[in-house]
Amino acid sequence: MKENVLIIGAGGVAHVAAHKAAMHNDVLGDICIASRTQSKCDDIIESIKRKGHVKDPSRKLYSRQIDALDIPATVALIKETNSQIVINLGQAFLNMSILEACIETGVAYIDTAIHEDPDKVCEDPPWYANYEWKRKDRCAEKGVTAILGAGFDPGVVNAYCALAVKRYFDTIETIDIIDVNAGSHGKYFATNFDPEINFREFVKVWTWIDRQWKEYPTHSVKRVYDLPVVGPSPIYLNGHDELHSLSKNIDADSIRFWMGFGDHYINVFTVLRTLGFLNHLPVTLADGQEVVPLKVVKALFPDPKTLAPNYTGKTCIGNFVKGIKDGKPREVLIYQVSDHKAAYEEVESQGISYTAGVPPVAAAMLIADGTWDTKTMVNVEELDPEPFIAILDRIGLPTEVKEIEPGSAGSFDGSVRDLETELADSTATVTVSAANPMIAVAPKPH
Image (cartoon, rainbow, N blue to C red; front, side, top):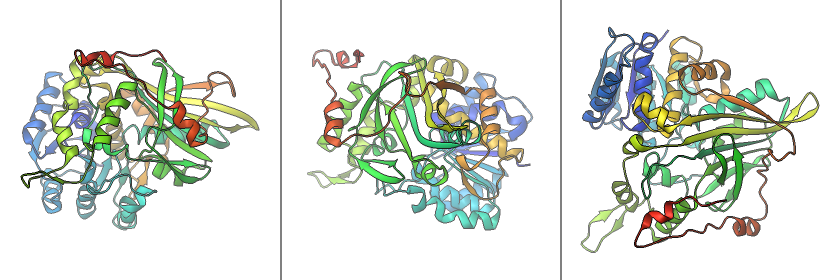
């Protein structure tokens, strides 16, 4: 049994995770929220208390200030708080520092995204081999449980892959992970999580096709798919964290990731990128001052946490899996639908943060009771998915499974054609008005 949780980070995902941890502190014990800006942690604590989410008032709920790049300081904080589980929900640049502190102190580690080097973007696959997996042997030697990518995607979708292997297929041919946010936040443009991390994802597309890595230009391969609840949605082939471990751990011919983007997003993103505003490296101004364009863009955009009060609509994230069961073709969609308004009413958050913030707490609960206390480093798909999905069903992210008639109108074809054909079909057309920019935000029929 492990108890006492240290949550590092105070953004939207940490906000949700802290709420859920407090709601299950009878299992998790004391909860400390730590960040560079302690006042942000205190704001989260106020929200938790305002919603009455502290299940066991005898357990501590408190905050600390920490620079998580400072490994000795993080080690000291882990010891001070007597934390046995650390949930890393800070920027992905912090992963290796926090993991190192956990290895040094022998405590469990959970994160929700792959590590990033600030000076590099979309590194050669498999990305996990560049950073996290190099520390796997040390985790095993010290008996340290490290669960990588335990958000939703990566995280829950990895568990859905494992569930497909365990329950629904004898042989898997293709997995297409589809992530669509059909919500509306009422802003001209905003990202649903850290803009800096969001934009760094879309520099290039690495995907796993025919058991090898293939690279495509960003937003060059488009489909429209009719998902449950959210309906027909434009989705684009993208690279994503989970592919870098699923390609190693799941026996499938192709594993691809698709994300929903409206034409307005594509337009704004393309303009920003073409003009150089998404450059992650410093540029020198005429007066000699150095700035990072991407960080300037981040400073100008709305904080994703501020989107929550007025967010409406739903998200749908799931895995479309094709393969063979009992000698016959089978197609299954394993998915989850969340509601932005319901997320705000429950934990004062928007739905994207909700889907990412609930799973690491479920993982922490499984470490706490020993079910997932692996004493080594693992990605989520290497673990038994059913206890994880069972907890998620209970604490706010219920899973649905839909059988699809193979080859029917409900089937999804993720095979990629020649690039010239794909580019011709992926063009986005946007209506804009200088007098009223919000005209561009109006949804267009597909």
